[in-house]
Length: 130
Length: 383
Image 1 (cartoon, each protein chain N blue to C red):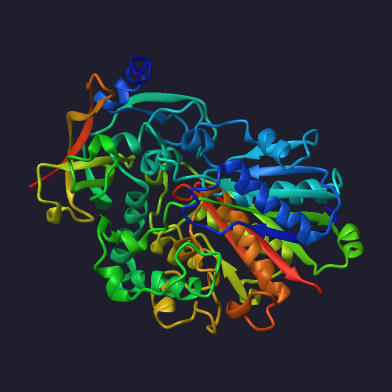
Image 2: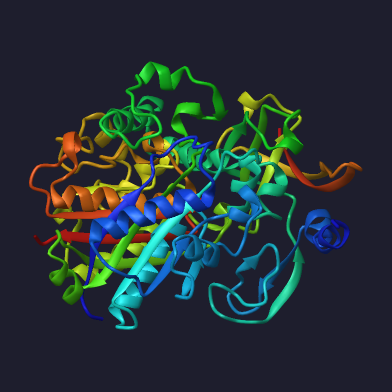
């Protein structure tokens, strides 16, 4: 049953909700109960900025079944302007345009369809800026 | 901790072993190791397996395999740390014997990967399901992240990546147990099917069936057996965040450096003293970064080192004389144990055409996922 598992992740996938450590400003995405940097257990809830840059990337050509019709599929590690990092697809571009250091914006998109019923699962993807 | 030795080794051939079920593969390797050691019993056993549940829909295999080995009744424990499960099983045996809890322990690893399950999907469970795999990244894709970052930062080339596969196939062509005991060319690697930019099919270790086992004993027991003794000088283990994106620098695999630092300290050695190493070349870029983390080559210079032959048989520090995961095969739970076996064979002087002449000290490095777990062992031949 996917529904509870999916629903739990909605704050992160839809709104980029993260925890900011009130002691050392470490940003936990997804939120954590204890800061891996300083051990504090106090966090302020924030939403990550949807803009950032590509730290590294690849273009997946042999994908898992859910993504097999979407290859070649560019995917990148993105650092948001606050310094949080996440993995996201880079879409609406030629794979050749994806490069380390390029600026991106995170947008809300359908990520995959789950199971035989094809239940849509949404979240963030990146588009190149400029 | 008291001193610990490895006195027996055994493994199946690695490959697509359609005729062999998981339980028989493991039992074959374990019996070979027991016979090789000449022990008349084992006190306990550890089984490294990444995902028998997904690959063959069978959990609880520690007890299953103790039963089929004919030793039902003894303590038997499954160890899981993705592709580092085998190395970690050996470490548990070393700790148990070192602590004096047992005198003779079998440490094995097994994976049955070709029974029809989607291996991409099963292996992806070693990554963060909600924040990596959900977005479509695969394991080759994660290592491709590392490769692109390394190429961007240090100018590592596509040809240098290919040379890792060429070298390991050269070595594997000398190993009768290897899944792919033949040579390949740089051109073949660079023209093979693209999997995840810049990694191609021949940059990737294969899907493999296989099992491997070793017998770990106290030095007292080892000396009485009268067989060649390989002493365990050190066992280092470290972890890191599961998600690659959570690491500060994607050109590094810090858990490898940490596990190595612990191991070198325990052994009282420096990287220069290591005469050969089996490392976790699940992808060509992995071997490059690992040789940097282990201190065999300067950071950023690993590509140059492989292309100039420094890490080949006959070179300054031969890496993956067995053929590595690339050519020997990568039955994930068994790979870490098979690495130990190759180094034991080398230190015994029984590695045949792959022998590093006069080798006395060797190292193994086994890791899980994109480097969220790593086990490093340092071994010394004493007889």
